[in-house]
Image (cartoon, rainbow, N blue to C red; front, side, top):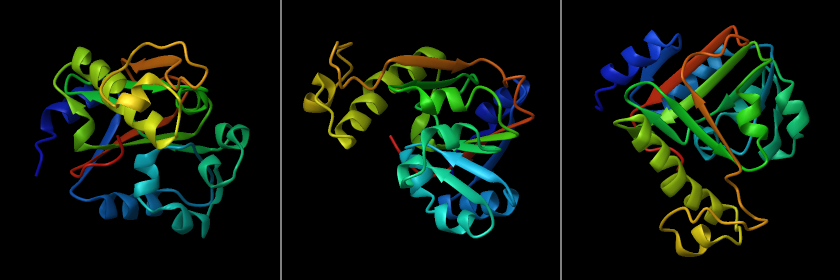
Length: 196
């Protein structure tokens, strides 16, 4: 099992609640039990989709999952928001890049709870490495997945800082500490490769 001790300690020093699970299935069980009777929003996170949690949550919550046909606006107003990170530094910084910015904006303010589910493949030793990972691994792979017409999607090798109208990396957020406007902000670490 991956040793999450360092990143967990650093995230907790920054005010985040942290939970660790060996498998995505166990993380999904935990989230399904923790979220009950709420409105739940989620964007197009591949990591969240891989938990195969939507139908389970829908049985006892109201879902606004825009990847499943819900609106981005409803997801942004939900009581609970589920997302992931493009890079997580072992030093505790959480990096996300977004195109329309609905996903990153929904993690910043206004929810009762935000859960960021992060697979071991998203870990990087430092902030600079996490930022590099977000730009040069997560960005190109997500652009390919979304069939965008960008140099990174075509070549799948790095960020080209392009000016394409299909560009999916228009904003960057870095969590230095837990946002003050969200009562419960939890990073769920999973010892499996999830998302990009």
